[in-house]
Structures are given as structure tokens and as C-alpha cells.
Image 1: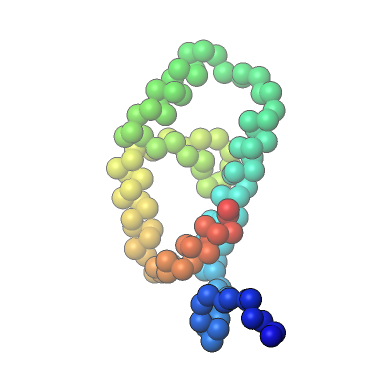
Image 2: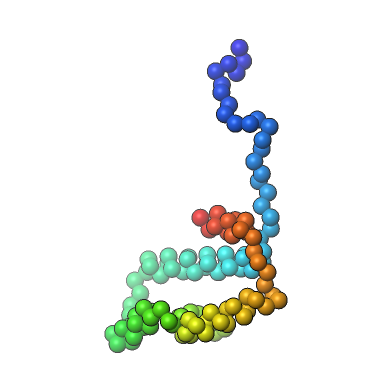
Length: 118
């Protein structure tokens, strides 16, 4: 008979959803910036970059990097490095996120970003 040796496990009436709600613009921007950073890290590691800082300056940067009370990050405008205390950074970020410009994102939006980045 036809389909005699075929076994199907699962509910034939159930079809899994393929709908993903649209990504919030802030998360989409975050995803894009993360991708750019990851791609730049990949190209930097593959190239042989010569040192342009003295040993003393490198040791100073490493000590700042190890200090958990200091946050080192890229500034919003221009080039360079911004060095801020973690306490001040956390207060500023909390004030920004509690403002009227941001809203809570759903767990589904974060999961979609994780799947896209993989």
C-alpha cells in the first residue's frame, strides 16, 4: 500500500509560525553597530599592526583597562577615546534610558537579533 512504511511523528495539523515582528529601530541600529565592530575586530586580528605607542603608554592603557571603576569607550562624535568613571556612566545611561525617547523591547526582539548575528 501507499505510505505504508512512512511514519510521521508530530501533529500534522500544527504548523510552526514563521512570523517575526518588526525589529525596533534602536535594536536594528545596535545590531548594525555590533556587526561593524565584529567585522573590524576580525580584520584587525588578521593584519600585522605595528605598535604606535611606547611601552609606558601601553602599560598605562592596560592598567586603565583592568580598573573596573573606569569605563573606556568610543565617543559619540569624532575620533579618540572617552574615559569615564563607571558610576557616572551608569547614572547618565539610566537617565537616558528612563527618558521619553526609549521604550522597553520585547524578549522576542532580542532573540531575533541573536539569531541574525549567528
